[in-house]
Image (tube, rainbow, N blue to C red; front, top):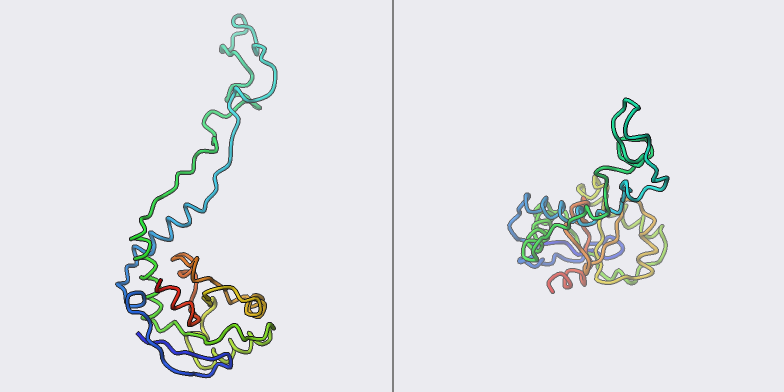
Length: 211
């Protein structure tokens, strides 16, 4: 699988070969969907706690006499059927149960997403990103030039740029572009990738993925 290497002036340098074990894997849509589902489920926080009748503040006096009123017998105004009473089956803060996804399946889903981008020709590589001028105008002009050359990129609303490590000037240049998402190769996952329409890798990020 080939990808084109560009410099920061949006000029084509050469075609490079992407690692086949990562970018030419079998594409499994169901596995990708399962990976995203597990990731989102495990990100969910469940801290809600409702008070039971033994935790509600108030008097412990019997609400009315046991006999003689013609009404049902009740021992406390804190019972769930009364206004201001405790919850009968409310959340207790322990309702989150994490889903498990093996490393083998996680890697297979990750490779499936990358291979899908490669198959759709939605990947390019940028050279020497650390030398970019830390100005939004510079990043905007680079993206604009690339879009003129690439129809798929021109129609992409979310562009993921993956680097091997953080560069302050690179981050300052691209962080204010709403369509650009800066991602790290070290913490990349199937969910973040699946949210993008087009991927731009640095040459060092490609090497990081092979590790």
